[in-house]
Length: 107
Image 1 (cartoon, helix red, strand yellow):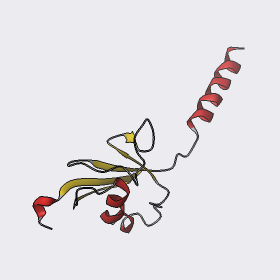
Image 2 (image 1 turned 180 degrees about the vertical axis):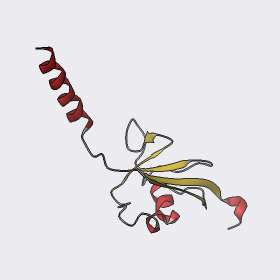
Image 3 (image 1 turned 90 degrees about the horizontal axis):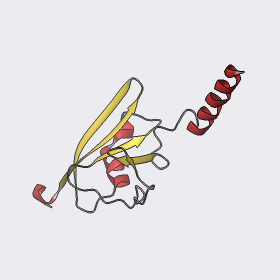
């Protein structure tokens, strides 16, 4: 396959003090999960579990809001696959605790 048949995409992952963006050429029809695997990003982040990682395209989480999952979402020229870290705390629980603290401070 000639280079002109390929599309350019990026795969990105970040920890608090380390980030990596890998540009690569992939065949049309490549999914976000396939691009993440082909990028070799786990060489830089050995603890990264790609099979269970949440992914998105430019801040839009795949598998939500009508978007296909990472293993079904076909990439387009210029897409950036973002691999998300697991949340350290449940946002709903954080808001609940903040509301409770606010309520007790008003008493």
